[in-house]
Length: 124
Image (cartoon, rainbow, N blue to C red; front, top):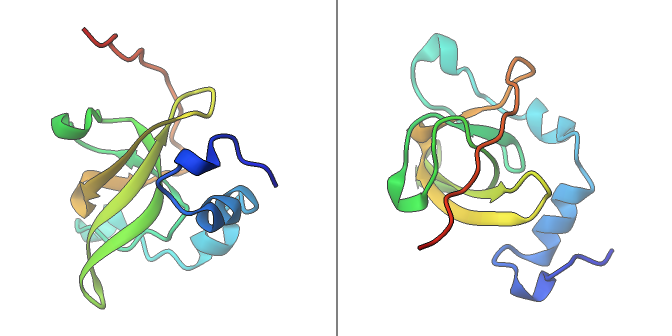
C-alpha cells in the first residue's frame, strides 16, 4: 500500500496502514469502555476510533465538534488514561494536525453525530 507523504508522517507507517485497513473500526469499538453519558467521567477510547472534540483547545486550534482519530493514548496508571494523541483531518483527507489533548476534552463519536464543516482561517 502506498501512502502519500508517508516519509513526512509523524505517525508510524504501520499504524496508518492498520487504521486504513480497519475503516469500520469494529474490532476496536468492541474493546472500547466508553460510557460517557452514564458515568460523567472520561473513560478509555480504543485506538483508531473517531472522537469529537468537546471544548475549545486554542493551543491546538481545535474547536468543539471537530473530528479526530485516536492514534495514541497517554496513561498515568495502567487503568487511567489522562490524554490522547489525535490526528485531525480535512474534509478531503489531508492531515491538518496531530495534537495531544486531555482525555476529558473528547468523547467517542456515535451514529447520532453529524459531520459539518468550518473553514480554517488563512494564516496572516
